[in-house]
Image 1 (cartoon, rainbow, N blue to C red):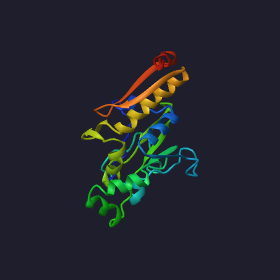
Image 2 (spheres, rainbow, N blue to C red):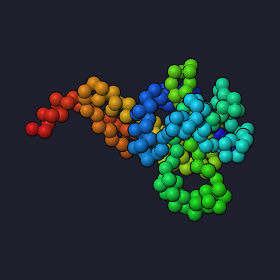
Image 3 (cartoon, one colour):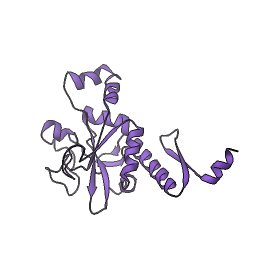
Image 4 (cartoon, one colour):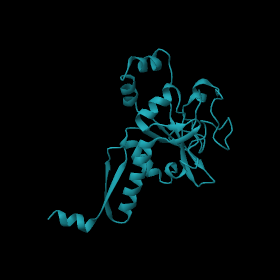
Length: 205
């Protein structure tokens, strides 16, 4: 099955909009994910490949709508940045159950990736990935689950995007000469604690 999410929908757009690549890199690093640019992947801008069903199988299953405005040729071939699971994460995921290991070894299925795709109309990047099949489920395990009602997605990549917004706060605070500490909440949210430097210094005396 091919299920590449269009995260530009009305319910997701504000949450999924990416305008700070440095913050996204920090979020990926925090979660142990690997993020590479088109240049690092040795491809042209807007043409980075991110693994999904179409790239793995060479075709679409036509059981999920295409992202609006995209062509079949662009699908999974239009990223400026690609986020992948690290080798350690892949091994850890296969170690969760025998069936996980079998599907990626005996059946040679691929681990899927997130493509960070530029949207000229929105003047921002959005993360797109195929959330189905074993490869998509493995990605969700580390970057956040997809929650949907039929074809309407209500949340996606919550873990990654929560940390992205947290690091946006941290970088913004540092630009203002403030201190920002990030902490994971009990429900997966990321809490930002921002202090003025002078106040923080006074606590040390």
